[in-house]
Image (tube, rainbow, N blue to C red; front, side):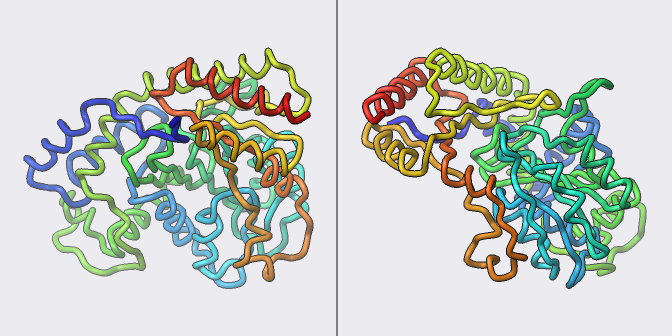
Length: 380
């Protein structure tokens, strides 16, 4: 069986976990939490980062930090994971969903401005498959209307937006950004996440929210002589043993990224050489880089996609479809404003994600491609 995903282990995870245990501080904000945060800030130039137990937690912190209140409107794409919306719904926000682009599952930036009202309090972009949303267009609109931007960069570690000024890492545009270190991500620790704070004025409160609404972080830095309950918050910190696992991954990020991009490019070569008009390939816009997070194909119709999933499974290959649009979900469809979002619906019915993980071999990729090619040609 070729699995859809297999978490990569660099080989130093247990070494660092043992060291964390030996240090005697295995709860949150210990030695390895600090090492991870410092490394991330240095490598990608983020102002401040805080490790969290999940990307969901990071997004919930973002919603709290922006003081999202009942009745506020938050714009985001419909084609995304539930956590993107849930973090703001929990604060009482009304979600205004944007459609996907016609050529890519990411948010259609051209539809953004017409969704803004006097009640809009945030714009949340999602860098689907690690491929940048057009941040130049988004930030121009956000600055003009003075609306804060949050980046859901769950899949976008070590990916960049590119323009005439060079490349800028995803996660560095919004006032706040959220990353995931779930086992399905390029860099992982089983379950984990990170909040990036690019607005210096939010750092102090972010630390308080992160530490259960207390100023405990200031206390342990010696900045106050006691700490207490000063704000809302929760226990968003991961154990330092989890951070120790993550640190091993961060040290090996260059090797991991090079291999994943190599595998992504090999898939692309295989499918491009076939040139089948019943299968569309991923699009990487000129303004985006590719971090090798996900390789997907877009099938001609829903029925073909479903039959192909079953055929691959029968041949010991696990491939999966992705998001169901949130605007049409059982929980939110009655709260949605009724607009049709045809591109989000299209990708939900046609997109198929193929196995992509560090240990995947070129031979296995050739096998996967051959199964797909033979099936489609026999069903034309």
